[in-house]
Amino acid sequence: MQKLLEFFNVTMNDEALLETALTHSSYANEHHTESNERLEFIGDAVLDLVVGKYLYDTHKEYREGELTKRRARYVCESALVDYAKACDLGVYLRLGHGEEKTGGRERSALLADAFEAFVGAVFLDQGLNDVENIAKRVVYPLIEQDRSNDFTDYKSHLQELVQSDKRSLEYRIVDETGPSHNKTFVTRVYMDDILMGEGVGHNKKEAEQNAAAIALKKLAKKSVKF
Image 1 (cartoon, rainbow, N blue to C red):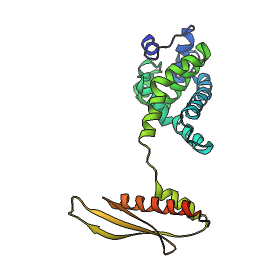
Image 2 (image 1 turned 90 degrees about the horizontal axis):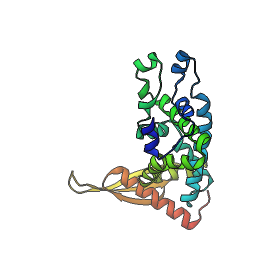
Image 3 (image 1 turned 180 degrees about the vertical axis):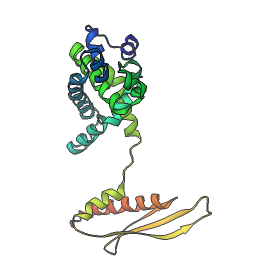
Image 4 (image 1 turned 120 degrees about the vertical axis):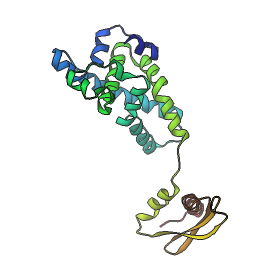
């Protein structure tokens, strides 16, 4: 467990609290000790706070709805599993015999819960400063990596914009040129048979996205109301 603390540059005054954080209910039942379930509760709340504050401080472009959506993404089970795997948390878990034999150290739900419990234990023992050390090592890098790979789905945005008024969208390929290994497509997007935008791309999906982007810019520029 000391290696885990060194990985995060974290100290613990109460090592028993850390042991509890790494104790699955299967082990607790077999050895009549406390499991990490209560610490999960604390860790869940702390992660919500830490991730929410990070997004608020570093991404001024996000409005409330986007902040909420992003925070949910970075505290969901799949994200927690990524954090746990980044520090080999599964190696340190205390599992019952049955859980051990059935691959509990790799089980997603178990890893996610254990990471929350670990965060909860560090918070109770050391406060938010050391929780920040954990976040800087495995949480914030994932957030920034994910952000750098962000892709704006213009088609979905356009669809959301018009669907409430029961309008229809149609994408039509109007031109296709070039050799098979390097084709260029020209696509037009129509709303109720009205031409809204034309896009060019090296595949059909790219051309459609670019056409939708043009349509969205046109609507914004003209302040079109439906």
